[in-house]
Image (cartoon, rainbow, N blue to C red):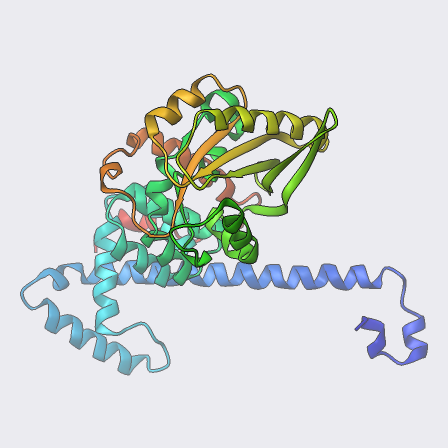
Amino acid sequence: MKPEEHLPPKLARRLPVSYGKLLGEIKARIRSAQYEALKAVNKELVTLYWDIGAITRRQAAGSHGEAVVKRLASDLQKEFPGISGFSWRNLFNMSRFYLAYRHLPKLQPLVAIIGWTHNLIILQKCKEPLEREFYIRMTRKFGWTKDVLAIQIDNQSYEKTMLNQTNFDRTVPAKYRDQAKLAVRDDYTFDFLELGEEHSERELERAILSKIEKFLREMGGRFAFLGSQFRLEIADEEYSIDLLLFHRGLRCLFAVDLKIGDFKPEFVGKMQFYLAALDDQVRMPGENASIGMILCRTKERAIVEYALRESKKPIGVATYQIVKRLPKELADQLPEPKQIEALMMDLEQELRPKNPARPLRSLHSLAAKKP
């Protein structure tokens, strides 16, 4: 319904043509203010819980810790009957929260950019600081709900992202390199496709198309779907790309070649051919060079490394599975912490506000206090 339909005919005729645009701008500004207010409230709430955790940490760890915290919870609930969050279990969580991050000044400001429930999930499920940082930043970047966050951790998104096999160090400009690495994981979990262990490439493609929203979410959430069996015509011959996506952050076409078997070195040559054609025929002005991903059921990592070594087009090789766990033999092959921190820099740049308001009291400054 148009805004002027709410008004008497005579008054509606007096409205300027630009009124709809004016209303839209004001609505957008109100929603923006609501969002900023929610962020400010969340930051203050997490800061409050940090303070309480710092104050109670000694008692929670002492011999009378449980009795003190339970009595404290009871007294606080009586004093503030309309405020939730002061259960004895949550008070213990506040203490654990403070203890987990008090010696990590880099992570202290980050915990306030996501909700308290999200923080608890990360605190309980993740042990390493870099792993926690990854999920905090990804939660903020993609707006994960607490359920999606839990699924991403159970699916080992951190390990699968850091173990990815690409040639991006040589083929992607430095400005976009880390973001490109974050866009291609080592392994994807497609349990939502409801496929049996034995299936054809066409069945895999059809299953993906029927659950395209979940597929794009599993891919990382920054992709738009452009088409399946995307046709390329070259020298009177027709070729088809299984799935063509567009990465909004990298601003590039993203070709996916589906394979239901083991990775073969010749797949790289075929993908290079596709990418060259996409760049010449499909890429729009202002877009970056196309990226390709070969998605196989299985792969030998050494073979992938050799196959990608001389490739001049940006290509990643990943696997997909129906089960949710990373093979144990890969668990100890994560990159060095410095390499992981370099990848995190892209997330940090994207999350940094362009026009920050006057900052609230930071957790980092609170850490310096000795309650």
